View 1 (cartoon, helix red, strand yellow):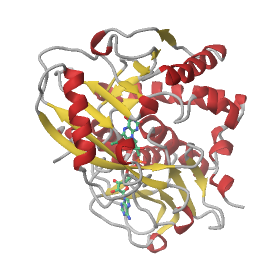
View 2 (cartoon, rainbow, N blue to C red):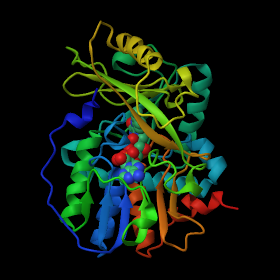
View 3 (cartoon, rainbow, N blue to C red):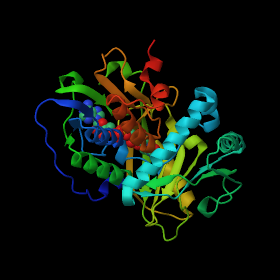
Length: 375
Ligand SMILES: Cc1cc2nc3c(=O)[nH]c(=O)nc-3n(C[C@H](O)[C@H](O)[C@H](O)COP(=O)(O)OP(=O)(O)OC[C@H]3O[C@@H](n4cnc5c(N)ncnc54)[C@H](O)[C@@H]3O)c2cc1C
């Protein structure tokens, strides 16, 4: 079945065609590739984007629709792992990028806030530490002993993040693609790149996150393809969840759309090793766990209308890789490895890598430099 998000009507897109060699060729027309294309084209470069499918048909049109601030790790853990100043600046940057998404995104984003829920006492302890660390560093967040709505009485406390958004990710990325082509970038859909070096371009940017494994062999052990599965229900007659909810370290995530349907994903831990794959198909084990949880969330029997899978890229330190690939003479660049948090991070890192290519320095580049994994 098709991902629910991709059924949205495609907006018209200005057509831009470029002849001959370009300054930058981008592989991947998801949120990263489109964000980079927009920034590069606005910076005056000739840009061509290639995608094996159409715009947003990778993970960017297959995800949970959470546009969360921060990184993939818990904030208190990030402070210890990356250093307090770097973590604070990284978190603040993602929040600024969320604001930029709201400005650009029109009706593709709703600033609903989100709930990070504790599934048990141990998780409560963890997210309580995260909440305290966020407050200490001045980030907006609220502690709730219980949440209103359908999740009331079922969890062990929650962090409310008022800055977060619900996003229609395919609509957002298609809009971004339109802005990029309006700025002069060319997007070639249904154009698989088999050999990166064969592209007629001065510089090459790989924006394939969990897909495109092997395109740059040096990155194969650094960005691990990981499968996520989702389903969507028919609309419910009542609203139970007014914002994105996520629990069990992000293994379960759901939101209810304004028309009443629930979109639910996760349960990767049911067969975690099987999900370390780039085979984009659903499995009975995970779909049946999702379906039972859906009935619990709905409190009534509801029909499943859509099921789908997508692939995202996981990294060892849960931080993306953004910058030049070492040993390639400044010709090959990468932005990917968002560890399941690519809606905001993909948007942000696409622009960040574009800035780096344009020769503009930015504080996040040091933290996210792919060189950290090269000896
Ligand atoms: C089920 C699921 C749920 C998720 N939920 C969330 C969420 O709620 N919030 C969040 O922030 N993140 C979420 N993520 C992660 C997020 O969707 C991704 O990190 C993000 O979309 C990555 O965007 P991207 O543009 O870098 O890559 P993608 O959108 O995956 O695009 C990569 C593109 O590269 C193309 N490509 C690959 N190889 C080639 C080639 N050789 N030639 C040409 N084209 C090629 C593909 O066709 C694809 O279109 C989720 C992911 C999944 C799978």
